[in-house]
Image (cartoon, rainbow, N blue to C red; front, side, top):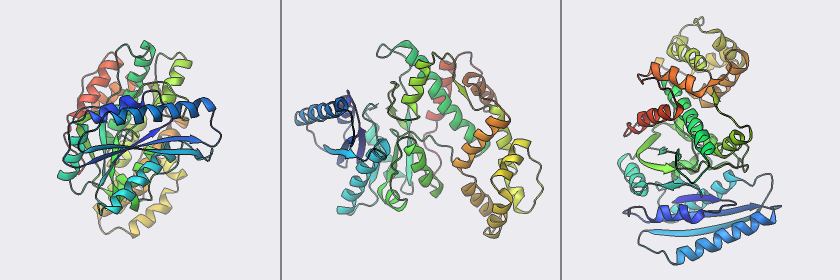
Length: 389
């Protein structure tokens, strides 16, 4: 099942074409597009949604082939407070789970895609093969690349998306460098989960933005989360005001503010974090472990000592202790620490400067421009054929 939330889209058919043109899979693929709007939607958006649906239905009528079927859900008049990409994904993913349940396929795979994204021709086949080969995997993130050159968008958009994607890859690689077990991309158009896991973790949330991050933080800690790096999703770099944060909003701010340089978390914050993670096992038996000041103050703020007592009490050995510690000090707390550190210790710095600092630590040659660094970071990730299982 592939789920596509669709709101105020002009190019839905491009997304559907991309899936239709994929190499044939052995199993049947159902593509569910959720055309969604709120109960007080602007009439222009309602009309655009209707046009998108009508055009898609016409296109589907002329494009039929074995093993792939397209269906549509009209989710109109959603409560304004809840309407958004999270709710739309949830509607489609819930429907996918119910369809799998009807045919007794709780191990079926629910894939998230976007109405302005496209993909490589081996996209569906690689997802099918991945979940068949790695039977224990609960879910996965899928390799992605934003377009970084061409004539479809203004040059300023390409310049902005290069730095924004570099920020995403810097953040992910920095988390891996410091030793966080949850170092995965959480991009809504580039993820998949088993139906049984989806149901057990309470399904998708209704967040207007960040729904992908919050959902995957319920899945990743289960273990056996993985990556597919043998195919590619191509998300759109277009500007958008539909969500309070994320790619579209970042591009909107980049253009509005006429930015030339994107700022990101200071690499020193990650170095301090690495000291804590490297010494984490010591807390199994020791109370007084020497740590950087930023870590000490943050741990005090989040009541570390009280929680440490509980974690120790439930631990059977050092490895078990470390596992429980990271379930407590998870991706949420890591992000919270980075915000704390930014406010009180280390100001944001240029993404090129920060990524160069990380690069020297992981054996990547320094670069003079963001585009070259982005390509280097892409190569690092894509070279991992399969990981974290």
